[in-house]
Length: 487
Image 1: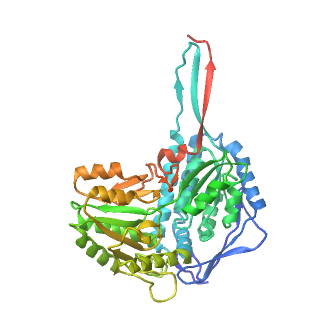
Image 2: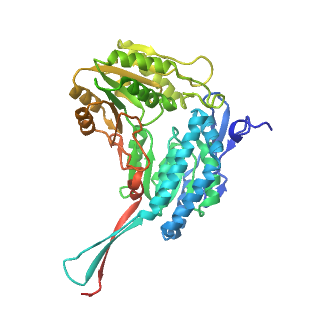
Image 3: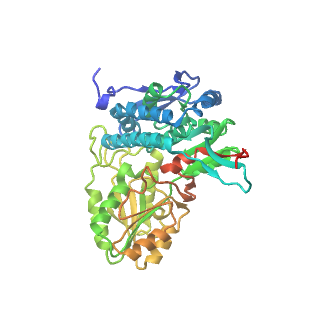
């Protein structure tokens, strides 16, 4: 059979099977077909796991936890390093599966897998740096020890926009902490998780990491399971709110729910650098990023230069099938829902008198392709300025006073990430202090790094991933008070 990109057989369909206790399980009932959003061809078939199948995975994780929690940190680190090495050997297989299901260009998908590998290595090392403390008592002959212990079984619910990297944030932190995990990938991206399961089988003890496939009902059964001690979820605000209601009152929960992310460009900013940053963070992954720039507020003295530059930069981006053109700037969108929403946001802005200075509609031909779109003079009540579009479109508006721009930037329910460009020190510290977001990036657009905490505020969720905090969220404290009578 002729081979396609990165080792995937041309026209092949990945068959996904639940991965439970180190083996692949057959499931009953109808499956889910996933098509390539660029071509419409079926690329993966996954089970729609029922409650009993979810129960089997959770019980396997609970059984493995009894031993895994006692594994010394150095051994857990060794397992994670070996998993990272196994995944590094299969970068192209994982990336090709991502591109065929999700639509991003192959080179971008390779970058995602490499960041996943880096997260595994990082948390392997963090596993050996979990420290307790001793506390002096108010009476002689006593010593108090504070220990950190793993929570138990974790349910990891992962979205489709970064289907491997976001598995890594949950898998690596939980396993490094001594927890076991049951992962539910998105029904839109099951195939890359199937490839990952082969790496898990070769490197982790049975039951430490398990995968169940399915839709929302599968996720509901997983998060409501009585043996689940912690739920880690990344996804939409609506789904996160439904999940919040589904968990029991004693189950730990962390939510990363995205939001409408602003950028402020002041009159002192390097406009060329601001245009370059906005182009990257507004249109990468076709805008399907929780921390994508949705709306930009630009000082009136540099507004025209910025809009002209961003429009030209957007028009220069290559939009193409990510397998046929691995180096494309923008690939297909993943879902018809977000494709239609993006078009609706563009049409709404146009109706309200905004100017479409780049893009504005679909790319001719098959697939869910949209031209990167820049909307100038966007009114504050336009959908593009108030809702998370999750597509390759960004609104731009002018401002006069910095305090007004900050108020407008803060004036949405969520608070995940905000961006600013300025060369004024006072403006820098004002923006960093007043922007009410969990992550603020000044003069750059990389709001998250693996060794610093990452999380949102308000309707963007709560809890942290990345950094030591991303491991600590899977630990619980124990106070041991010893009487020894030593003087």
